[in-house]
Length: 297
Image (cartoon, rainbow, N blue to C red; front, side, top):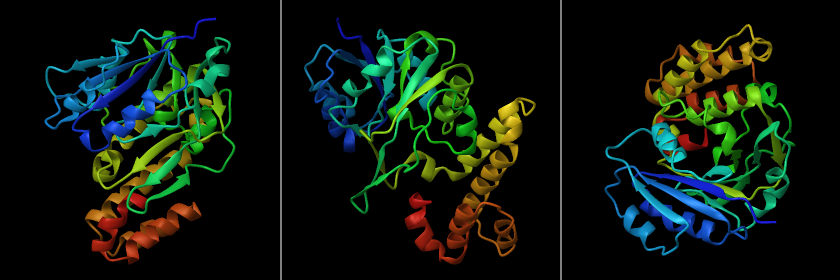
């Protein structure tokens, strides 16, 4: 039986620093029936030059007419895909050679399964250390309730069936939480198949977009919550958790950029122990250290 075609989407804006490692991790895949949809979002560095050195018909190059946000870029790429399945890889992340071939069970799964995902490693660049994203067993099936409690799906671990993605797509109003919104909406309609292995490496470094745009992260999540229907059973059950997450994002931003004495009272109101401890650390550690270390929070 012929292997099914997988479309691998790479959205790139000035990704030259890590791009070659990302591309080599695709070339080294043991599953070889794929196409790479590389979207150059008007990069001003040598990203295009690095990519075009790969002489392989599976590697396809597209350039946007002007710089667009990440989720517009993802939708642009989706329109170029021909694969039965679609997956995403950022320019600072990379896969283990077995990543694609290890998902054969999902490739032959029933129609109610819309996507699969897995655990991953976080690679902390400054410390040169790897850490499991989660030690908890990842659930399969309808996972919406689990996701609203704790979001455990990383986009770089996802493979999704192309036939369901055409009417879901990414919300281009978001710059940071687009993948979160995308996975939540998908999980409302389709089952997910989980894999416990960690064959994906996600690089954590000083320039991660969500870390350098804390205020945007908070405002987008706040807007996202306004648009949810809390009469739906799982949103109703997890309403408190979701608004506690919003408060956590607000406090992280204020503590790093506008620390005031009265924030200690807001921190103490946080019910969950671990987020409260992280916020207290940020509060009591000097700002210049926090700005250097904020990626770990």
